Amino acid sequence: MIPNPIHKVLSTLSTHGVRYLLMGGQACVFYGAAEFSRDCDIVIHCDPANLGRLQAALDELQAHRIAVPPFAAEYLLRGHAVHFRCHSPEVANMRLDVMAKLRNVDPFDELWPRRTTITDEIGTAIELMSLPDLIAAKKTQRDKDWPMIRRLVEAHYAQHKHQPSDRNIRFWLTESLTPETLVDLSTRYPGPANEIAHRQVALEAARSANMEMLRSALSQEQEIVRDADRSYWEPLKRELERLRAERQ
Image 1 (cartoon, one colour):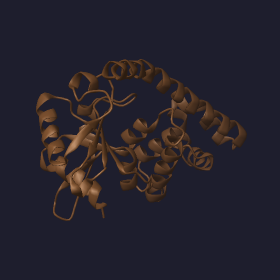
Image 2 (cartoon, helix red, strand yellow):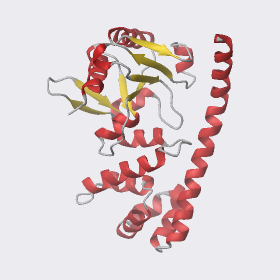
Image 3 (cartoon, helix red, strand yellow):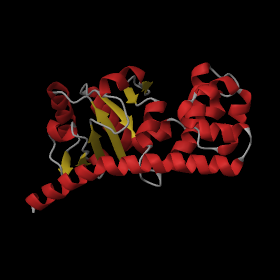
């Protein structure tokens, strides 16, 4: 059951025909890795028609923009998030964060065919970012995102490990952050493990059950991603600071 305020936001987007994908904490809930959040984070197809449909949905939700940047395609396409606060009684104080471009994530036109669609009790479609794409979006500099990635992969592994597909095996080998799981996977599936080039240090340690080396390799992977995320956001943060100063 989708909590009522969340359902109202998502069903309003769907009713207005907005091409969006749910990501963030609410998407994690649907994938079995619960994360408490009063926010809705979405990525959208950023063209004039879809922005118009989104504006109609925002109007129904009585959603007002908060902070900077402005709600405009030029900022969305540069990677900024535009933040809204909903004031309609059913969704009072719900925050909706809208993005169109994400670091290390494919363009929307490639995300859309891979999406997960769920249907509520009256047949309204709720569109979620696919699990692999959600994990890619979660790879940030923020401390809270990494335990969530771990839980997402572990939940998927627990659900599908008794009937593993080649696709799932490669997904687990590529994304798992749990040393014990990687040891198990690399032992059971040495062929695919040998083909995951960017994780060879971690998977070699997993095959030898060298837990100290494995934890070190996983930590190094994480730091590389955190540094890349910090570098990506630095010019965007400077632009936001300029916009705040101009607004004041």
